[in-house]
Image 1 (spheres, helix red, strand yellow):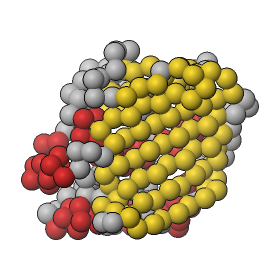
Image 2 (image 1 turned 45 degrees about the vertical axis):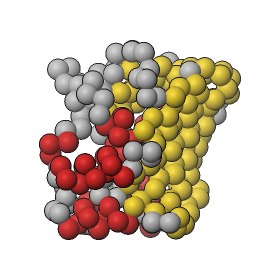
Image 3 (image 1 turned 180 degrees about the vertical axis):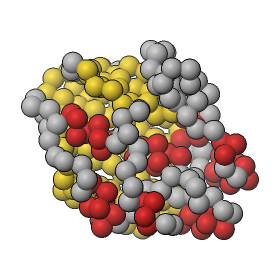
Length: 225
């Protein structure tokens, strides 16, 4: 995998979710302090088998993700107010499980970590939104087009990794709420495949990776506190 591409700014969540050649699961937890600072912890699983298959069939254009402490340090050095506070990498079966925790100094820094280009996130008064699958720009709702990639590899991912999930959780100083949107940011009812805890001290959503990808209308979340 091209190390230069890996270290470019990227939308981390989308890169992880849609990197069939390397990643098959992702969990994100965001803890927000009263002053807007906080910590984001990410755990993602990288399949060595799928990584090798991706390299063999030419899917080199798929999003790259950091796989080492050095990758993380190089990735966030361009983001003012972000600091890597812990990193671990362990082998579990055929997967490498990576956990990285980053402190952020403000909501703006958090959004830069998630979305350096600023096209998938939005911040408001005591709220922020994140498009997971879709495009908030007018006239476009489809972010991930599976036709761009090798269909055999995607079908293999659907077959072998249907039980791998994407999950995101959020907590602030008081009670919070989580709202589901489509890929354009319009509020909708949660998809049947998603498990949602919509209000409380800690709110969360979990959905299968394949289920998320196959939602043609796209999917997003809005956190309010």
